[in-house]
Every structure is written in structure tokens, then in C-alpha cells.
Length: 298
Length: 299
Image (cartoon, rainbow over all chains, first blue to last red; front, side):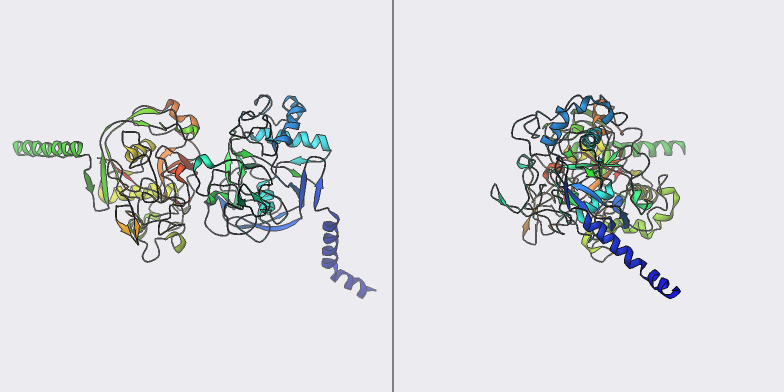
């Protein structure tokens, strides 16, 4: 009897692993609550930071981070998705707004009717990512979406964003280590006037406007994690955070003066598109090259 | 005795007036304290900012700035020059370091032994710009240089940098309004060092490995003000509104901030970021392979 119990104990790690696998396989790879596809990023560890030793000092040291499972938006939030929030009175519902953001941003992004910025207020721009949104507007959208669906949507933490973008094998970009114009919308040496936003899902392996695109999905199936527009993250930004960040589910420093951004924009060169690259901006600021995507908790 | 002193003073004054006279007339006077050439930027006014209305919101309004005279490094600081500071124990002398910098950066720049970035700790990289230096290391180098020479060396202010780069005629780059790969090292400029740095002084109208260059000297004779690696300036970055209320005489940037100014554009950056009016910034602790610096020498 004692012996058999002992033998069972020996197998606890194995049983635990099985349970974990069952748990994972139980979770659908893609989930859709009626507001777009969200792809599963399973629980587990990954190595975060600039393993190529080529980036800024805020990207090192490379460190192990363990995250719970989550779903991340397959695409950045589009104008049409954001329009549903506007039309539903999202700008007038205080419950959606983080302190300091309520009533500060009018009733739509400033570029909403700008042709150059593919504004969502103009026809045929539905599939472009929303830009010109502050961190507060991105947060408000997530809260509105949570209310509509009954699930928790929120901005990704920097760690969640980076794992969703590059997986666990320390690749430089979402698809591998090399980048060219077929993979992502970025500054690859073309003239400034030839740089434009692309609609979400543009880089799917098909021929577009004479350009042979490659499928730029990350290891978990999230698209456009690299390029087109930068994405707001939930965290405050701190250049030295990696020196002291917790190993499990890091959520950024307690406070700060800027919020973290990830992904380069369409006017930024390859150096700024690296998945380990970190950017920042004041939470109230808006940019023609900044948007966001959401996380859906399990 | 007194008379002798008087005569000496008069002679010295005459020499000084002569020297400055020449400087004003020629506008290209070079001074060298044994640590590289510094070119003269005469006192006077220039128009700072993006007169082409093509840049970012922080580059406007265009505004008149009047500066005292100064000398600026003919080149960015090279590995060969920086190595003297390293070898002289510069990293461990507290007097060279701005508060918060001492002891934070080991004993040499980041990438110092990385061939990808022409690290100065490796043979044959003496003529490449030093990179992988924080703002603190750049400041420490200037202070060390001051101690060695008895003259005041420091980082340029942003205004000093821009005037030294484009002069007083509002040109877009150091040499004129148009850029191509024969003038500067930037993204897709197709130089023989594509996807990496060029050595300082590469753009001198010479033909290097079959690659034809133009002379990229600024109106005052400073080279490589555009491209290759970004250069630290002394100022804090004050966001997009600083030009709206900066002082018209010798502006030194806002009182405080979280980022320091960078100018010039790097080899990874496109032509847009190479414009002399373009402004960039980074947190002062940042060390990466696209950031270096050059110094100003006070007259």
C-alpha cells in the first residue's frame, strides 16, 4: 500500500503535465464573441528581451517570463470595430474611462475624418486599423467590449504582447529573423510620400497591388504584430523595468509618465520593428501611427 | 616690468583680434588641441526648425536663434579617440561623471567588442564612430577632454548642433537640399558598408571601393553631421512645444525631462530622419549601436 502510494507520488509531475495538456487542448485555438477573432496563447514560459544584443538598453537583460494563458486579437482593432464603440455612445459613458481620460477626447479620434490617415469616418476605410487614439481611448474600447460580450477584454501587458508576437524561440520578428516589404508595412527605403497604412490582414501570402506578400502570422496566429501602426500596451513604461520585473505575469511598474507601445509604425525602419523593441508615449498623446489590439481573458 | 606686461598684453590682444578676425572672415578656422580638429562656427543668428513644413510637430515653429561663437568637432568621436579616455581610467574618475552615471556602465561602451558594430575594442575599428555609449558616457568623455586640454569641451546644445549642421541658409541637409547615398550613410544608401556604419570622413568626394562619394561638409566644415550614427546633445527633450517658447539667445533646452536630445540620423534610418531640422530623443541611460556623439569646444 505504502509502496503504491509512493509510486503514484512519483508520477505527480507527469499527471500534472497531462492535466495541463488536457486543459490546453480543451481551450479552442480561436474564439470569437462577435467582435472579431482572438487567438490562443497557451500558458507557459518564454524568453523576453533582445537576445540579438542589437537594440536599446531597455530591452535587456533577456529574462524568462511565465504567463497564464490568454487570447489576443488576431488583428489590430479596425475602424469598423471602433466605430461600433463610437456609435454605441462609448465616449459618453463614464464607466469605460480611466481616471483622467473621461471627457478629454471629444467624440472621435482627430484623424477620424482624415483621408490621409484612412480615418474611420470616411467610406471604404473600415478595414484599416484605427489610429489617432490615446491610451485612454484604447482602454475605454476594451471596457466597452467587455460590457458588450460579458468577457474580460483589456490591453495586453508588454510581456503578453511580446510573447504573442514572437513565441518562444526568440525570433526577431513574428515570422522569423528577416524582414522585407512582403512581410510587413514599414519603411523599407521608399519615399516618404509612398508610405501608407495598409488594411489589416494585408500580409497573408496573396498578391496585392503587384506585391507578393508573405503570411506574417505570429506562432500563435496573430497578424500584423510587426509594422503598420504601433500598439498601446497596458503597462507604464520604465526603461529599467527588466532589471527587476517579476517572473510571473509582469504588469509593468506601479507608476510612470508614459505608457508602453509595441510594434513599429509604417514610417519606421526595420530596426524599430523588432519584436523585442520597446516604445513609449504619454497616455494622452495621439499619433497617426498608433492604434491598439486587445487581449481577451479566458 | 609693468611696461613689459603691458606690451605683452597688447601683443596677445592683437594676436587674438587677428585670430578672431580671420575666423570671422574665413569661417572655416580649425583648432586642434591634440585631440582632433574642431571647426569654427561664428557668433550670430540662424533660423532653427523645419522651414519645409515636412517634419514632425516638434520641429516648428521656425524661429530665430542667436548663438555665441563655438567650435564643433569636425567628426563624430571615433573609437580611437574614445579608447584614450577608456585607457586613461575615465570610467572610474568621479569628477567626469554627471550624477547618476558613475559606475553604471562598467569600463567600456556596450558593443565595444562586437564586430557587427565595429567595436572600438577590436583591431582596425579606430576610424569608426564610437557607439553603444549612454549620454552619461558622452558627457564624461567631454569632461575628460577638458581636463586633458585645459579648454572647455562639452556636448553641443541642440541649437548649436543644428546651426553647425546647416548654417544660416535653411538648407535641408548639411550640403544642400537633396540627399542620396553618395552624401551620407542612411537606410538603403547602398554604401560598401550597407547595413552598418561607415568610417568617419568617408564622404569626402573620394572614390572608396569603387563607391563615389560627395563631400558632405557642413557650411562650417563639419563632416557627417547627417547620417551614420545619432549624436547626443546636452539638452533635455521638452516635447513638441519647446520651440514655441525657447529663448532666442543661446537656448539650452528645458530645465528637466526624461529624455536627452539626439540629432543626425542613423544608418538604420531613412532620409526623412536625416533632415538637419529633425529631432529625436532617448532616455540618457540608453546605449545602442546607432548612437554616438561629437563635442563642442568653447573658444
